Length: 167
Image (cartoon, rainbow, N blue to C red; front, side, top):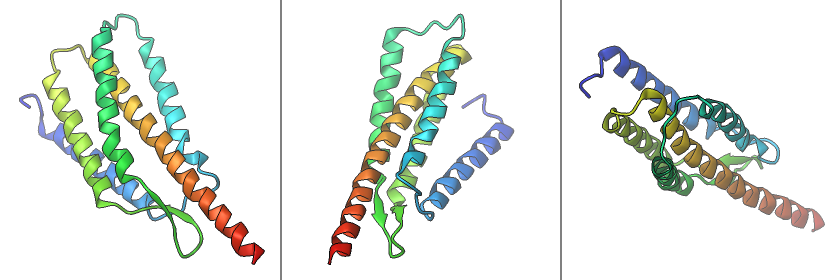
């Protein structure tokens, strides 16, 4: 952490605070429609990131890519575990409010920041690409699993409405 200046630290804290605030705020709003909105960030993120992968001169080994993807898989597990959905009184589906989710986000940030310091001997482009592979893995797994969880709650809600209407 010898190259961390106060301006960078302030930027990191503001970025972290905004991220936490946005994620917790979204837990208070219903998820509209059939949940496709849960997958849109994955499509945008992965598409834009793969354009970066075409950068000439990147020298990333297969082992480094596998390690980044493996770490992304491990980091997705707390996010998956702490993301659940519920039907509230108004009949809408919401993400369940979870303190564990907030702690997962904080832990994820700390791990990524620590790895950035630990892997500082890599070229910035290579480090960024490895972090992209890691983030693409955990975000994709988390969002796809969240979509599946949402669809289960959505389908149960539809079945309950059909069953209730038949009475």
